Length: 518
Image (cartoon, rainbow, N blue to C red):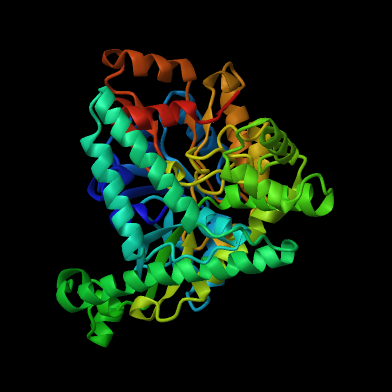
C-alpha cells in the first residue's frame, strides 16, 4: 500500500525495488500518422524494427498503429515479436488521438497527430506540453476495503501510535531474525501481543446496506486518500518551482519564452500531472462479486464476506464463501460484459477522485494513468484479501488487465475485455497491456499473419496499447535455473524491457508466474 513509503522500516529498500532495472533512456517512435493525417510509415520505420530484433537495451522502442497502417508494417511487427524481441510496444493512434482531443480540446489536430510517448506509455499532446507524467501511484484497493468495512483511518498520514507500532515490529523482526529457539520465542510472543493490540484497536465492521452506499463510501475514501497524496505532491512541486528551475529546458518551450516563466512555474502552453491507479480490476472484480453474491443472489451476507477476507478465506466455511465469489465472472471472461462495466465504473470513481483535488501544479490538470511497473507486486504484498477471491499478499493486477491466474480465459477473450474499456475517457495518461503469449500459438507459415491480425483486430475494437512477451515459458524457467545459458535474454517487465539475468529472483518469479496465454 501507499503507506509503505512513509515509515515502515524498509522505505529505502522499497523505493529502490519499485523501479528495478528501469533505465533512463528516451522512447523512440516508429510508424503512425503524420501531422497531415497520412500514414508516416517509411524506410526508417522498417530500419527501427530491424533494430528491435537486435534487442537494444538502452532504447524504449515504440510503434504507432492506425486503421490504415500497411499490412506489410503490421506483419513485420508480428515477425519481430515471433522472433523473440519483446519490443516495440504498440500504440493505437485512433484511441490516443480521441483521448488527447477530449482532454486537451484546444490543441490543434495537427499537433495531436504528432503526439509523443513519454517514458513508458504517457502521451504528450504537443512539443509545448509539460506533462509530469508519473507523479504518484494510488492503491485503490485500500480505500475500497475501508468503504466495505466502514473504516475511516487516514491511509496516508500515519499517526504517532501506528508509527511506533511499525518501528517496534521492525525492531523485533530484525533483532530476532536468528534461527534459534530464543529468537523465535521472543518474536512469537511479540506477534501475539501485537495481534491483540491491533484487534482491540480495530472497530467492529460497519458494512454498507446496499451497493449504492458501498460505491458512495468508496468514492469518499478514495477522494480522501487521493487528496492526501497529492497534497504532498503539490508541496514537492512547490520546492522544485522555488529551488530547481530549468532554464535550458525552458528555453526550448514556446510558452516559456512568451510568458517569461520557467517550465516548473507553468510556463509551457499545456501542463499536466499524471497519477497512476493500481488495483483497478481487482476492485472492479470485487464489486461485481459482492453485487452478485450478496445483494442479488443472497448467497452470503456482507458480514460473511468481510469475515472471510479478514481471515484470508481460511477455514471450511470461508472457503465456501470464496468459491461463491470466484464463481462470479472476472474481467477477462469473454462472455461477461458486466465485468467490463464494473471496470469502467471503477475508473469513473478514480477519475472523480482526481477531479476532487484542487490546485494542480503549474495551472494544469491531473490525468489518470494505469501502468504499474512492478508496483502492483509491492503493493499487493501489503494488501489484505479481497472479495474478488484474491488472497492476502498476492500481487494486484497489472494496469487494466485481467488479474494473473484469476481469469479462466484465452488470449482473444482477454483482449476483447480490455478493448471494452473506455480508455479515451478514463486514461489520458496512458495504460499498459503486458501479456505473456506462448510462442507456439503463432508458429508455422500462418503465424505472422495470425498475430498481425490479432493486433489489428484488438486495436479496431478499441484497445489502447499492447506489449506482449511472445516466448516459450519453458525458456523462462530454464533461464531462472541456468542463467549462464541466457546472458542476453531480454524480457518485457512493464513499460520497459530488461535482461532477465539482471532482475531479482522475486521479479523473475513474478514474470514467470504471469498468466501465459496458450
